[in-house]
Length: 293
Image 1 (cartoon, rainbow, N blue to C red):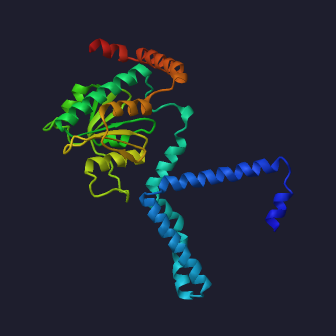
Image 2 (image 1 turned 180 degrees about the vertical axis):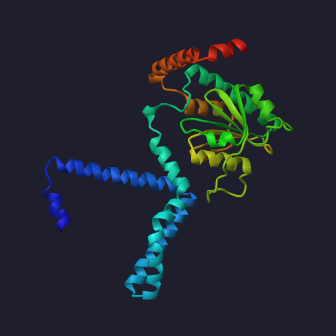
Image 3 (image 1 turned 30 degrees about the vertical axis):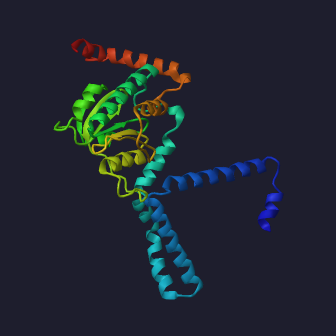
């Protein structure tokens, strides 16, 4: 009754603020639930719910010994939560920091560069699918993949179908692992990706697909997979796996996921011009490297 009385006494200014406050809290709770739903964190959260339920029931039923034992572990709760939910907390903070006005990733590309890169990727996955050559290609977007890049062999080469086919050719020293693309360049090959431990995965999901899901769960990377057994092309993004895709569907989805909006083309052009100017001002800048090439 006290709550309803205070609600009725709110001024015309306070009421909209209170409604917005409640909606924001509801949205945050909803996003947190969707973030952990179906993952290991969801099972941990259910386990914590059962633990607190036992604490409440043991107190209500005056089970003093059990209630005392459960209360011993309560002070350890904050530390235990950080340890148990560390991957999910990191992912949540990355999602919060992934604001649209901050730009797209470490390297911003124009529409033409992205289209050329997507065409090369579509061509190579179609060729490897036909030849049943396994491949795993992760495309970095806003969240950096530096930890994964460090696990492989560093490269710095323009994305091309011929180079990617050479990397993943059976017998190649770099074929075992993932190739990482940043911007329109292959920055590393033979990289180790984290495996997904989602309980939703069936027994028929192979290691290559689990690795693709793992990195897409922990970042916003787009991952292409070609099955060595069946030649099937798959795409993983935001913790989901799309299987059995045709090359034209792969091309369409990559363009949708990687393309820059038209309204930002001017800003990106200025950014590229400034970057090029600063490179030329530095000793051994891009202009000198291009001359050497």
